[in-house]
Length: 150
Image 1 (cartoon, rainbow, N blue to C red):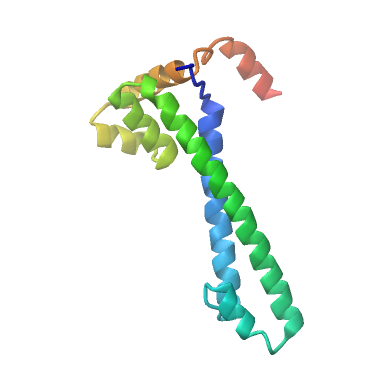
Image 2: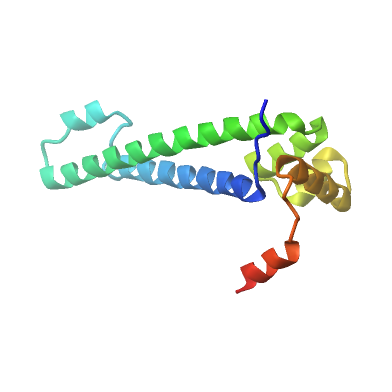
């Protein structure tokens, strides 16, 4: 099986995508709640006899948001599967840490408590996991820091 490379940026992007989906879900819920609408587009269509322009705008926005959510959820599922496949190369402890940090968005202190490890141990495990997921992780670190400061 070929090596699947997952960078720290890939993991960070996974968190961002999860956050985007949660924000879109909230926005969609607010649109449904705005006019007392149920979660069904069919039910919305039956109630649209009042202010059609308002209704049409809300309906169009809902349809657009639902399409965006479908696309983003598919991308999230695909990325999660790719990351999980790459994590086969990790120890159980490393997988546990990566899942807690990037899938559950846990902070370092909470991870340490959950894993019964010190802050330093958690960071060593994290660094080891990132090195296995991306063999180039940590190389030219000074250059990367310089580049990001600009």
